[in-house]
Image (cartoon, rainbow, N blue to C red; front, side):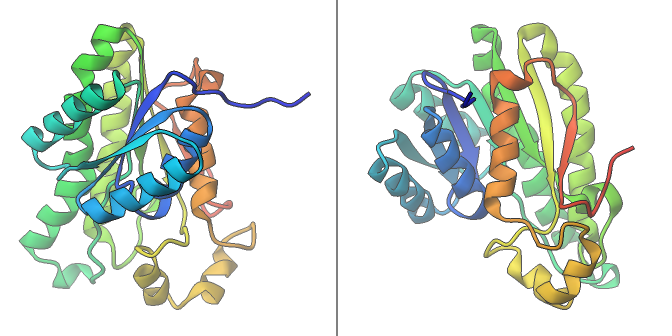
Length: 254
């Protein structure tokens, strides 16, 4: 018997949807039947994802948003409602990282990483919250990082931001459950995306990194998208406030 996740009739918004994990997640949600708002600071990148989705027969719209800006977040939610009719799923994928030793980080670097990766997730969730409460249903999936769970050199500010997203995920999940809203997080290990390549290079390249992964490969965007899809679906209806590590065994929860 084949089991297939069906999101027909659902509407999702994916931040950072113009590339990498965000693009793959947008495409997978669309293939599963959801209409998708592809949100990104880069309008052309978002439109590129939309074109891939519509060429495959799906429904999607491009949304320009700076996730740190409450007005822009509210406008993106309003545009999603105007074009797609509702909002059931929010995937907070947008992130920013500075690759430096801690001694070289500046206040601007802290504000950049924390602003996009932590505050951005909170701002976008707040923008969607009232809509989901009124519907009595919603799913929020935050992208964490193993940098936020176990720490990584050269990415201290980013790791601190992602550790904050863990706390946000758990606290919000407890508040929002009474309204039928679930909030979980996916914690990727090193995943081969254009944005991650400078990090891979900084750590000595893919071949050197593989020694740390029991499953002897780095992640692909599809690995993360598959986990996100599960948390967006009714198959995870009794799961909230959880952190799902998708890391090839690099980190293992207690």
